[in-house]
Image (cartoon, rainbow, N blue to C red; front, side, top):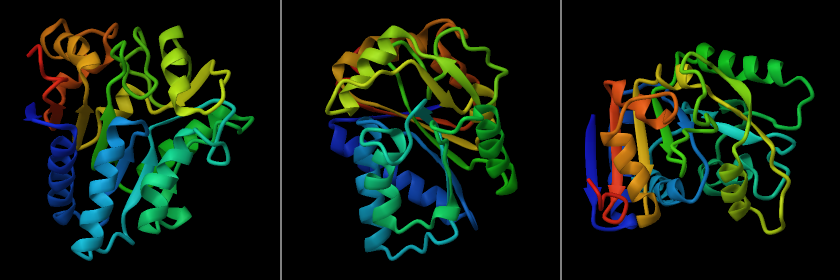
Length: 240
């Protein structure tokens, strides 16, 4: 486990982007798992900038969904796919067949889980998983108590997740379930990039890094991963 502390959100985002670029240079056709949300937005801005400035060919890169809200997909403003399209996929001109993303509107969600797992397997597994940290310690939409052995699955969202999730939408959204990569899938990634920013996350960061490793605190399980890299801004790192 490596921990990188930066004085600001912007510096944290650039450090993570620099490190991801370095990692991908040694990979022929990297597979990236991409989280949506406010925290990784700065990273994606830096990635797009650096890729364009360095004229890096990303036509062989593949991207896989971390999660999505049930009943939503990329056509819905505020969905996970909507944000990633705007922040990363469209700016990089990523072809649709290079993206394996959950569609929360599909009727057969079991099949949707299988499709994403198959996409990962067909392209050699996840090289870099970019993750954020939920206020209750969730990773993706793996809520506290989620079995570590689960792969992609549908899950009932905790009330806190439903409340916090409203910030991504202009109008109040009925959020009840999510579809997400499971902890077992994420732990198979070769490198995990965990990004956390803001003083409101300082306490949960401390619990994740210093507390008991438990399914009740899903992010704590990442400490068992040999390729875990954690990026914190000054406020998020205040208690460690």
